[in-house]
Length: 304
Image (cartoon, rainbow, N blue to C red):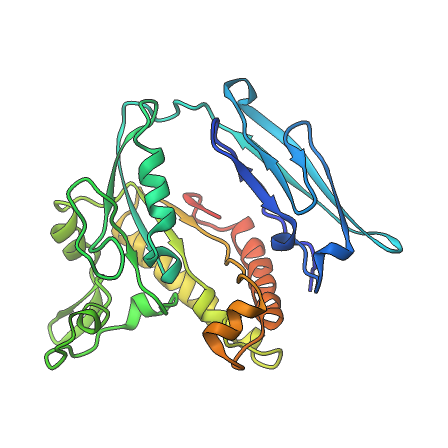
């Protein structure tokens, strides 16, 4: 178990604030008991995070080292690269994106942020593909759209196909089936073509992002964590393979799993069912495995 878990690359866009929060990358009960020392020619080293808002003169690649100090001295050290692309990268292009995820996507906060940022004159013209814009609400033409579903996991998009003929609640009916599945010759199959026929004029997306894993790993304990991660890996490979088979040219981005807001949030949502600390341990272990997995992933159009 590695306590310091850093991505190999962090991207920062001119004019947009980028942060690495130390609690998200170093496992400990209380981050206030440690000093986090960042060595990088760019950005600012605050108590709880490293922050960087690049401008046009900062385009390039920069080394970044993080050293963690405890009462006895340095306890961990890691490196990552910060890449700043030109602000007008992709200007004049027409691109489409399919955003897949759980409740974090369903909340529609980060998809809306992307949609807003892409309205800038230096950006490509973006079309978002999806059946809804949060809670099953139909998206407006040219607006925010995605495939985010509260409580869903990597495997749900490959297996959820319930009989909805007797479901009267529109919300329950909307969640009954993965939109990527259909029935053919009496069998339920993953059919991306029927999906894009309905929601993107038959065209496959240029970009696919997947933000999943919270629900996969949420309930794991120390006894079940590693078998849980083995199952998650199989579902990751299966879903990405299904996307790749259908969309051979798409760039696929996979997000690391996010932490919770703290124990009070876990009490409000799960009563005594799970602690924030156990979930944090689960997330760090899964993210460590994902970093290893995607470091030499055979599909070079998949990015973590």
